[in-house]
Amino acid sequence: MKNKEMSKAVILIIVSCLCLILAPSAFAHKLWINTTDYYPELFSHPKYAPVPQAKIMVYFGWGHKLPVSDAFSADYFNGLNMIEPDGKKKELKPGTGAFMATEVIMKDEGARIFAASVKPGFYGDVKGKKNFYKMRYEMYAKTLVAVGNASSDAFSKPVGQRFEIVPLQNPHDLKAGDWIAFKVLLDGKPAKGAEISASPYAKPEVTVVDNLSNKKEAKIRVVDYTGPWIVTAKLELPASEEFKEKCEKLHFVSTLTFSVP
Image (spheres, rainbow, N blue to C red):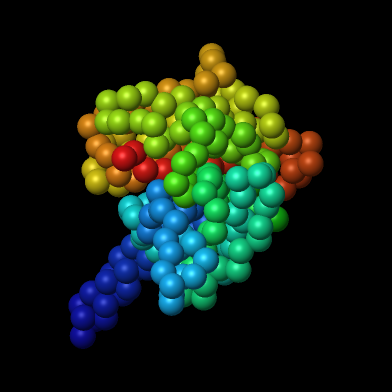
């Protein structure tokens, strides 16, 4: 009887440890934006679309596996905007499903940038220090969509995210094997020390890496895969004066998704 009780206790301990190891956390995850079509064309129909329009669905990826992993909770959500070809921002109301799929209808040609973010928060208790954490995290995401024609520099202007990846070319102009350059900005300035990685959805284990230790731009070669890609930038800094009483360091993550034709 005692052996059975001990066995049960051991199993409970193992399960508890696994739950702690596998439990999802905001810090361990990252946010990205998916879309059903990165290059939609205007469509017209006398009955269903008397005014020309392009329709797509925009939805969130959250976690680690492409194209989607965990459900993205509204508790983390901090807004979704569409930046129009003229630079104006339009706030979008996300869907209520697990991936917050949102229908978007566009009636003009041109480049659109969809931008979202996670509510900043703290992660990781520090032993012996009450209300003090290992880090404060901020997460941002963008995706690039072009309806019809878009200029070569259509996506090269920052949209104002605190930590932001800015492509210096239009991905529509790329082909497999080309290089694409990026700026990574923190508060509008080059984010020195940021680490950059990129992977194609078709082969996520293929990763191209660069960093901004000694330069202002990063370059990624889009190797042999067309279709959607995700670029991730990460940066860690010592806690600022504002947060030095709350955490040890600041942790920034930004993602950019686009498609290579």
